[in-house]
Image (cartoon, rainbow, N blue to C red; front, side):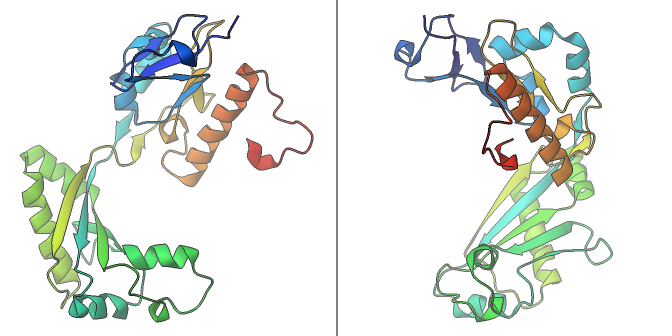
Length: 263
């Protein structure tokens, strides 16, 4: 008999597949079939899911209570775009001495991070050399700006319109960078679940929700580590999830020749 698999709908719910279900049984075009599922979205979005996720959490009320106590910060992200042929914008952006920078609150209370996107991407793929001497004609200039958390929370409390927030952030960016030419286009996005403020404190950094005999179903992410939204927290949860997944699938994590990164 074919081993059990998960049928996962593309709507916010996960449904248990019949024990003998396989990929050929997916007659609904909106569904996909998987041998195992690991969910790493923000905890509030996990709590909105139905199906097997909701069933598994109901079987673990202690974990459910801890998930409900998780808290996230929020911030806005502003993307700025200039036309490829805007020589003034390209010249201004190319003269900046950084690809990205953190902004201290003493300098600007509403903005914490600014990045020259195209330059940052090239810096990650280019083999050394002066960043300002690289070919800047590959992409049109663009910026990404992150707001501070206090600024975002204040705007959320006031019910501010996202477009209005974007206009204010743009004004602040131009004050922070005098001479910055006006962008050809911009996009503002509320990053509702930015970083974990209050993570789960538990022995494991990933948690299995599947019952005995069911395929693996795990929830993981930075919220499940005491380290929170730091590299250490992401790594700890990913490693724990991988170890549990391998164990449930009956695979040997320490198989000969497997690199340490296999976990």
